[in-house]
Image (cartoon, rainbow, N blue to C red; front, side, top):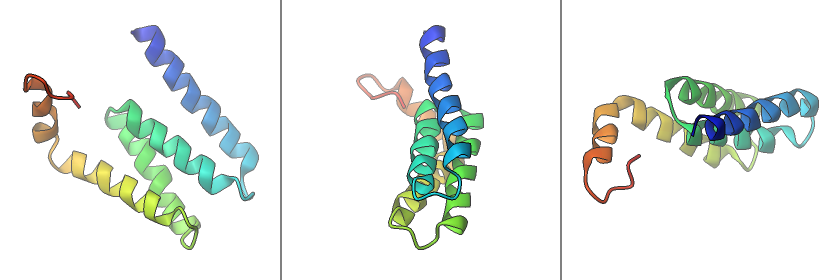
Length: 100
């Protein structure tokens, strides 16, 4: 499991490295969203903070981009998890739940 987690985290590091290369291009908003979404999927407070930073920064930087609603949804999802983590974590204890 640890090797798989490291591989997924490595994907994020590669995406963040690519973000530097696409800075200022039309690819930047899409790659920013993909990176933030991946961090969110990985979970954990550090990844949530990094994902939120990318998404909220994108709302400022790419305010009129067609991905705006996606960035807004991602920020809202992260914020809702942060508001009620005990409720979300308690789902993992329900038999047959998805455990997220």
